[in-house]
Image 1 (tube, rainbow, N blue to C red):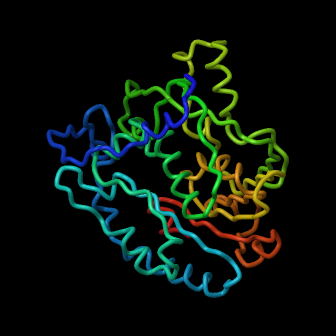
Image 2 (cartoon, rainbow, N blue to C red; image 1 turned 180 degrees about the vertical axis):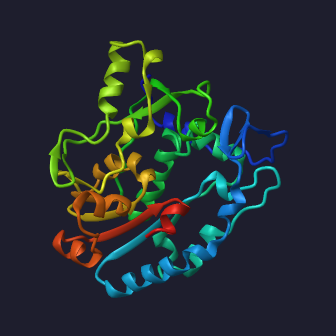
Length: 311
């Protein structure tokens, strides 16, 4: 349906903060509460010392490049929260107490309770949903000093999805509707691993199908990566009507849903996933050479805890 002015703001309102009980343990990995699947063995991820070496390397990189504007954005997930007791891991606190950047250059997508997790993340997958990713984009706009964030024009259900958390149950019955925002993205050129492509992800195709009702939506089974774009070594967006700036985004799959949004503001965005860079290009990622070759102005690190353990 079409959204009226500021309708999306009401959708983004903060949920309540309450503890939960009577959780169903489906197997060794997955819990179920109120229809929402989430990871059960959370405390195996609560050791913040795993970040130590990478934080030191990041701080050296920051000090070696005083000409670049560095930003960090940490994506908190359910594994950092015990929704039954209210206890929380200190992973993001460790990172942000030890990364040598001013506070205004450090952002975080925070989950304060199960209600926030329930609202902003898929029921069957570990990624955030359309509300979560758009909330992150608005927070990033504030941190990156973007004055003209793109706003959603409509909301659509474009198919049915069954994600990674559902896969871990070994059952086929856990599914949910894939509901998304529609945006009027500016025209841009897109390159995948240095080769021209028509689009990153299939946002427009899925939404056109929903609008035209050319296929019964209930018969479309899809995934987060099919809609927003898959993990690849490098995605490059060029927007001739952008802000004249170039940014390098180093992240994981959570930034897939953000790239076209941010590309609506910047003249040039390079998104690099270092997990795949050497495999797909045949040589390791060299930060120093990369920022020089591509005339990068700013660098944004964005990802979940696994990402900060791997950079």
